[in-house]
Image (cartoon, rainbow, N blue to C red; front, side):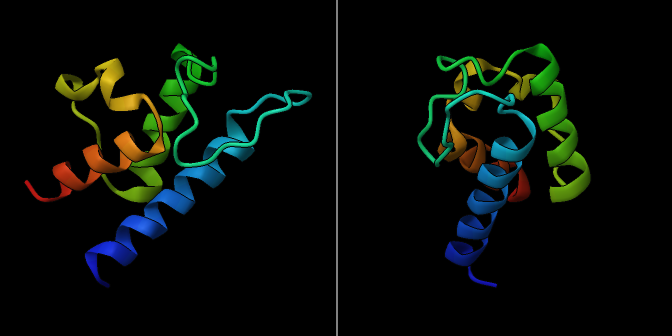
Length: 89
């Protein structure tokens, strides 16, 4: 799998997970790669824990405490960049 294919697949999986699991019923939000997750209120402490669990369990990349910075969770693009960086270590 090429790096671009892997990145695109990861972006698609993250968008799907966020749309299906973090957007509350009744919210009129359609998530894409650039949806601001913190500003929009999609990520709070509980939802962030669910996202971290998804990344660890389904993506296979545990996020260390040092990476739990709001800047790393602005949108799907920044999350994918962080995951790619952690995969290369």
